[in-house]
Amino acid sequence: MDTSDTFISHLIELRDRLLRIVAGIVLAFICLFPFANKIYSLLANPLLSQLPQGGQMIATAVTTPFFVPMKVAMLAAFVISLPYTLYQIWAFIAPGLYQHEKRFAAPMVVLSTLLFLIGMAFAYFLVFPVVFGFIAGTAPEGVAVMTDIGNYLDFVITLFLAFGIAFEVPVAVVILVRMGMVNVATLKEIRSYVIVGAFVAGAILTPPDVISQFMLAVPLWLLYEAGILAAGFLGSKSESYS
Image 1: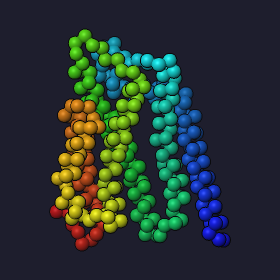
Image 2: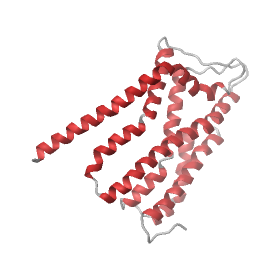
Image 3: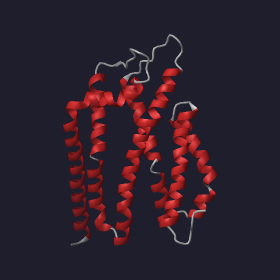
């Protein structure tokens, strides 16, 4: 088989894998569609539980009450089908990897998925109550906190992504060390800059209360330290974590 035939066969396989990924997401969405409103209610609960008695959310656009729950259902479908999506990606790239690369890449894929989901759970169960409690508690007297459901969805997705990506720090550190782009000694040297960067990220990505900023910055720092530990163990036997 010549080079052009090989390239075309790879494109065909890539197309098939992408179609399977899309089919998996669509199937999950179809199953979740009847429960879209309940899923949104579950997502909105951290805010609603912090509002005063009788507090509620509002919809300022005509189509918002329909499309926002659909978006939430699609987001849930993406998360639920994520293991299947990653399997399709892995099945596509695995044949081109050496055996030692497969032994390293497979655990990294699984670990990165778990860490992202843990980051989302951390945001939902621990961060959201603090953030929305702060927002509801600082509203001026006589001002009713009634957030638009579309704006609320955009806000929580931002926090989900922020904490999900933040929890990927150990994986990123290990990969950088294994690829030879940085060594453990350098990671230790720049520790102070990483801590400052973590608090800057916390200030930018979270509401302007100190507690929620710490709830992003401190895990970022601790996860960086965990990455150094893992990189010292997996990356180079000659290096150890002090």
